[in-house]
Image (cartoon, rainbow, N blue to C red; front, side):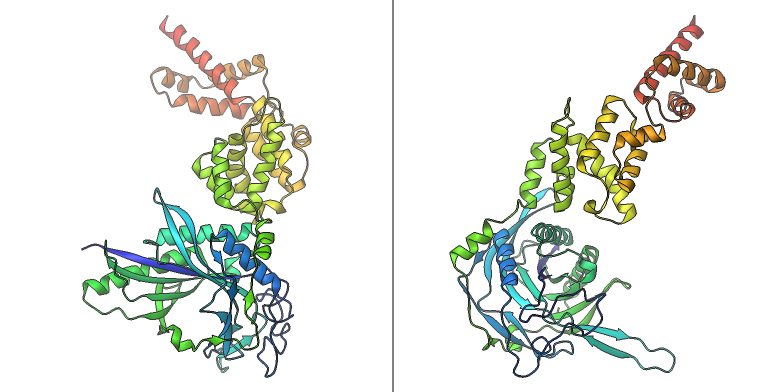
Length: 494
């Protein structure tokens, strides 16, 4: 009997605002800021303190909702979600429940050669909790848990999908598509390691083809795509084993232990009535009129899926289009380079530019650990370098060295080529002389080649290139080498 996973995801998105959701405290990086320095009576839950709504956070929530094809509700209501946790100073969280900001959207994802439409159930605004810091015991000191309230009250957007995903890979594809969209809109930095984007996976299993929804388990606070995939894989296998053994799967909230590769029990899964939701008495209903939505919609940038389609129309492969459209800064760099390439004579084609970005440039960026907008490389300089390679001014191997120096210094490629002496040798007489010299110095290898060992030609090619310090035209070297071999073969046979 075959089983299938039924997966829904909740995303908790920290919004890029300068102040918190319901007070004027500054939003800071909770991983580096001094603890409990950006806290006031409102976000620390002091009696009598009154919240007020951050309009910037609402603007960003509407923007995301529209990008997700959601219906932005005319009226939404903030509610108190009551539960106890040490880093929740008020004893409740201001969130939205019965009347959220938006409902009924969708995202389309590509996974395993098919397109899946993942529906969005709801998008709502809320505030983040504080942060617990656990200190392990050392020697005679006791263990302790410390509370940092710098994060308490930071604006969060919660995006809840329907359980439309059927595999861990689909869940990761959805998460990556959402990550890309959020960073395109500049509503979130996308830095999952810092906890500004966290996923929670609701996982159940059922007999393949069934429509039944069985008891689900929720895996909390997943802050990497790797953790998301591994935790769903593990939990799916656990539940399938339980079903095959006729064991009851209890509805639970779980954590993920990356080191052991296992989910761990945290508590029994709560239901909505456990939180005793009721409208926040200190905040009025949030009313969103059409003029407000239209003003935000007019500022919507081109989104990743639209860029992918346009990049495909330029002659790029599906892989290149996806990689280049995944991050807004990379997509903008590529587009500027394409515009520069179109002005060359002959034009530098988008496919050539894409190849250089996705291979050589990405390799450098990964080594130095910086983003594409932090390296010293204007897009037009990259196009100039590609043009020099295509025209034979320098070869591809030398150009890789030039590119690295360009990224380090911001210098134009022509200056670096001249300075490092990386001009390509195209002189036919010089190349013929070196080829003849290499063949004369390696009679045994030439004999093996003429005897039918064709792979020797690659070795001889390398010897010629090495003798010319890698500065010769590879195509010209190969043509010259092949002609010399034919002559040697003719001489031997006659």
